[in-house]
Image (cartoon, rainbow, N blue to C red; front, top):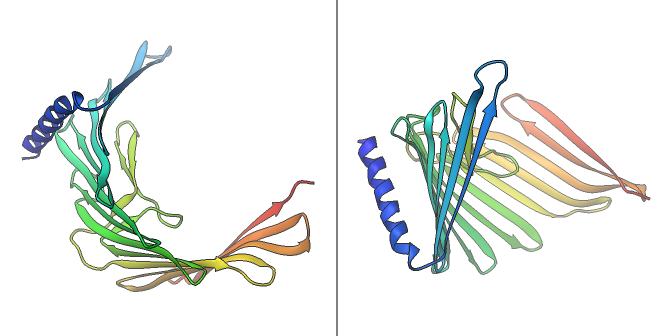
Length: 264
């Protein structure tokens, strides 16, 4: 089934590319590298990557291919980015052609209206990847209210990469090569799994600005952090930033100072 899906997607994108070639700009790039090992095999590695892109009005279609001497056809990624009315759409499909496996899919839709940024993030990870199968989505809403910047990320089986959480790396075990994406599916199926709320704004007294981050999951409270920036120490050339994080699982408090010395 996976092999048939892979062949179908490759065929559809290929046909689509041929049709679009006559309608919009087309670009291609190709790179290759050879690794020599004087102590072993004379040629120890060959890598080749190829990128294609087609642009039709507000839509950009892309293809990324990677070949390795030891494993053959390693990655095949298809991407699309464009606009649908007021929405910006971004999607990715990743396959492992050497094993005919579907690996990962991601779909992102963002919308800006009345000073509010809203985003929908969906991802699916196959059982051919460590941690899979898994799928889920997340909703992100950000805006400014009363001088405060507020960001809410509600998780339904997926996390969105930000300053606190990483995205996901799809790693090829034999070579260590990877592809990185911002939407990380963490559990199979849907259902509420977490809420991350960030509030930042101007500080008070000697504190330039203050940010508070609260995160809890369906199991309960996870962590809370306070970040103070541009804390004045009464010396014109010296101030510092401080982040305080309390994690419920380890019952620990982490202090992360960052001293800033201004040049004279």
